[in-house]
Amino acid sequence: MEQTVFSVSEINREVKMFLEGTNTFKNIFIEGELSNITYYRSGHLYFTLKDASASVKCAIFRYKYRGVPEDLKEGDLVKIHGSVTLYEANGSYQIVADFLEKSNSLGLLYEKMEMLKKLYFEKGYFSDEIKKQLPKLPINIGVVTADTGAAIRDIINTTHKRFSNVNIYLYPAKVQGEGAAREVSVGIEFFNRMNEEKQLEIDTLIVGRGGGSIEDLWAFNEEAVIEAIYKSEIPVISAVGHEIDNLLSDLVADKRAATPTQAAEILIPEKEKLADGLESKKNLLSKLLLNKVTMMKKELEYRKNNYYIKNFANILDNKKFELMEKEQKLSRELKRIVQKSREQLDYRKQRFDRINLPKIILSEKENLKKKSAELNQIMLEFFENRKKELKYKKAQLSKYSVNDILKQGYTITRKNGKIVKRGIELSKEDKLEIQFLDVKKKVVVK
Image 1 (cartoon, rainbow, N blue to C red):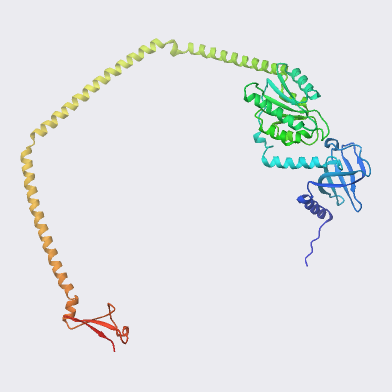
Image 2: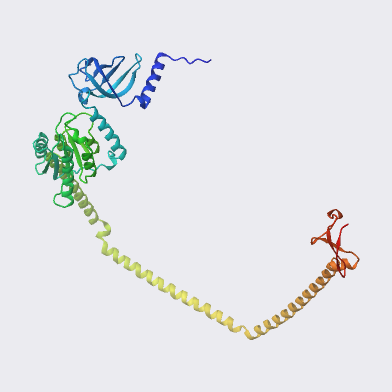
């Protein structure tokens, strides 16, 4: 048998590709007991997950940004979400996780979020193609958040600091706990209804709150909020204060901001910078217009000093004289053409007068009569020849007629209406018909 020999690196690479290439080991949940917990300054967390019979090495990169608790200790029972990979250098496999929770706390929430994310992704709710453009300079901004939280204060302060002329309309909504998703969705629907009824003219909506735990932020993963943002005719910025993976409101909104403050910064340009930009454009436009006017003045001066413009009256007189000369020349040429045409007409009239038309007509009649007689004679001869040919062919054909054959003493034998040509066609008891010159007889073969 032919042997396939791998190097250590090759076999580790093949195993890594197999592990990472199959869906069986992707996006899985594992529960176990913590040990060998190590937090690194780089922001990575390494630990071992074990049960009574086995253990597996695990890692979470940038754990601080994934909401991983920093008080983990040996023996804690946790649930992680991640994928299996292989560290090629030493051939050991490990779990690279993107989420960790202490058991019986957040697992159900996280699973529900992943389920909803998949559902709405397949529906196309997160597609970039359907996202609406934010206005360049909104005048009226609707905000759906708590009326007592830091979020609305940050939005107001940031907005008025950047552009004091902007109006902010608040729909106070509960943003945490039972009923929060319902109030947030109703707030989004309220502003859309006000726009539709022409009671308000809201340019953009900011929907969000300050930071918190995954439980605190959960209202922004609820179906009611996702549906309300998706159906909103007004562009929506999702501004929930968190740095972990996107909430579902971030994915469905037209724009995501990391914090309410950032939402205001994204939406509102600084008035001073905007004014400076307009001033710069004004100066540039003034320079362009000034240059254009200068160029037009030079062009006008050039045209003013142009030879044709200066001497327009003289040039016009010369053109008049040229036109008069051409008119006279044309008149002479027309007279010459008319005179020549008259002379040709007179010449042809004289020639026509010299022709004896009655004599020519009489001569042509005689010729026609003569040719008609010749044609009649030719036709008579043609038909006579045809008659002779037909008579000859009739005589030839009569030699082969049935009566002529019977007159010579021959008979015609028929079986079932068909002529019998050979004796082999006959059998005993066959009924035949024999035709003589004067009669037909029925016979039976013996």
